[in-house]
Image (tube, rainbow, N blue to C red):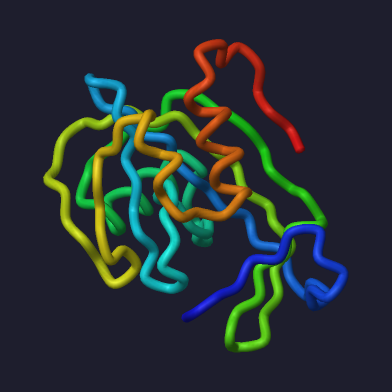
Length: 157
């Protein structure tokens, strides 16, 4: 379903839900980041999505990355918790979510790149090429945190 992100926008609709979600920063042995071009808004993003009932956060990371990219992963660390009430996501069905996402560092364990209903393109991208890609400011923030050489602190915001 198409969606629209709002960031500190006074014209944004009021949120009516909050859904725990995960994103995964997956880096390969060459330091390239796994990204998808989302099918719902055409923006580049790290793979991720909502937590399903009955699964752990680590299971959600694995499921979402495999579903969207074909790559098997293992979540190895938490990079950040993102819960900015000024970031809301409006869906065509009337749902307006307040952001609540936990970003994980995940290591690839196998699989082959492939697209899905949720991903129009799937690529491994060099960090130097990220500035050329169209993505939300929330995703760019997560990516900057993921690529920070000093990942000793979990980002909370």
